[in-house]
Image (cartoon, rainbow, N blue to C red; front, side, top):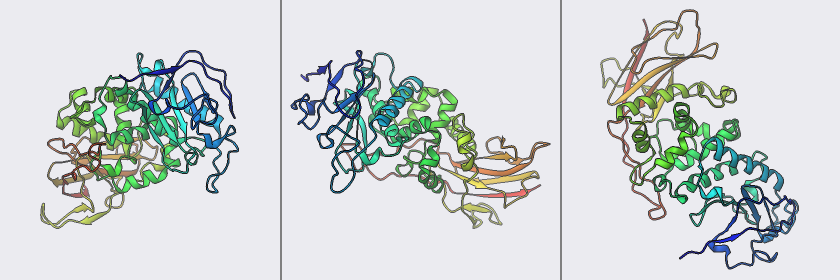
Length: 424
């Protein structure tokens, strides 16, 4: 039987000393139980630690007592701002617990402090998860906590909360999924509305990969936008509930469809509606911060070959996969101020249009609309055609696991189409 060793008292010595909170206990992980955690000479020691009501921060022996001026490692500086680290991570913790509801009453996190372990290492990777499938924890090296906003820590603490759900035995969370990375990016975005600017390379990559299937591994770090759409529809706390409802044998899409009673056709249409909102970042979150990225999507087009009708129209360079989409800017193809006729021909596609006015208002067409007209008194600055691959049956993309780190190659469909657009 595994033993749980608890510490209820702690000496706090070092660069930052806080008054000791009385409520929560410290879990001693299995790989620390052979150490003398009261000795400053141990790899990990309570003499090199600090804590808040909800968290304990520990740093390895190599830092010494003063993390603002530790010994260099291989000529590299190892200093970090402990006070800022504590303030930011505690703020993230409170938001993820209370606003996003990733830990509900009865969680082990009610009784035990999550753990932040700062490694005296040049390893550029940070890890979020749990210690012993018991309490949320994360491990990080100084080179990942140099930015004052601590974006990396928000992402990794997101993983700690995600995995606290199976640790609390209140959900299987699918046994693992690329959705974890998407969710951590979404959680980061919630606490930092400027995420698209701070990590703009993710957005630039996503714009080139919108045609990829939802949950495709190439996009898992780039695209928290469907999760934001689901949050808009069902509330911020719904994402944590999705994790609690997740079952091994499902993926997040199947869980979502089951949870909200959606048919495949209804889910397809809901996804397309989300993409209509995405092109102008018409979400409840971060509207002001995303204005510079609104209407920057576009799709490279080629001329059709007449496969669908005489006089080939246009086709995208990359056809969409399952729930992937093409956002096609029509501004140069037609006079967007005049009524537009649109025809899309293909197999198992859905399409819709989004107009954006000079007042930055959105005008959404019906799904599979054949006509679009600007309302009287409005002037468009952009008009988008969004075409999405709409599968008849959901396909679960194989995901890597600890047991199977190289899963079978995904057998994804593409959904070819051509379209024609002109003014009436």
